[in-house]
Structure formats: structure tokens, C-alpha cells
Image 1: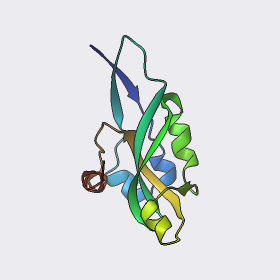
Image 2: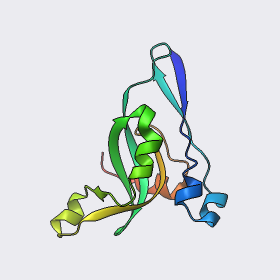
Image 3: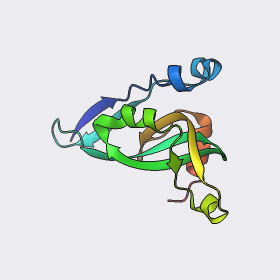
Image 4: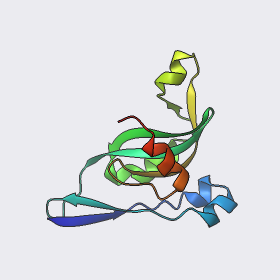
Length: 121
């Protein structure tokens, strides 16, 4: 089985993250995909560590793998599905997008890993 590598250019850190955060814990994420030959999956499920109007959280998305960086840039200000908050009548909106990785990968940020470990699957 051959492993294909897609480097997610999460240089968004310079745009979306406070300078102190971008310089301390944030590192660009390199993601490996296992697939057939040189083919990379057209669609992928990603989990993103996002700061929202109700706090930090992990949110899942499905989008074209090649469009990952573009989709991450369009998330701030977008409404997010959060059933717990919707039950209280609160609409959740994305703020800062700290990191997005394929669903089967681990986050590089410690706080994101903590939240992801407690996330229902």
C-alpha cells in the first residue's frame, strides 16, 4: 500500500491566529492519506478546532480534499450545526479556525486533542 502525502498549507495561522499563538504552539500540519497508487481521495471528512461565539469546539465537515485551505478560510462567520446549543435556541457561529485535519488524524494542538478525545463518535 502506497502512502500519499497532502501538505495542508495551514499558513492561515498568520491570518486567523493571534501572533502569540501562531508563534508558540501552532505548526503547519502535514497529513498522510493512504490510498491506491497516486490517487488522493476527491472528498474527505475533516474535523476542525474552531473558536465560536459559545467557546472552542471540534466540528466535522466533508469537502473536496483539494479545497481544504479555501474552505477553512471561508468558515469564520459561518453558522455551525450544534444540536446542544440549537436545543437552547442559540445559533453557533465560527470564529477563529485553529486547525483542520482529516477525521482519522490527530490534531497537533494539545487543547484540540483534549476536546477531540471527549467528542462523541
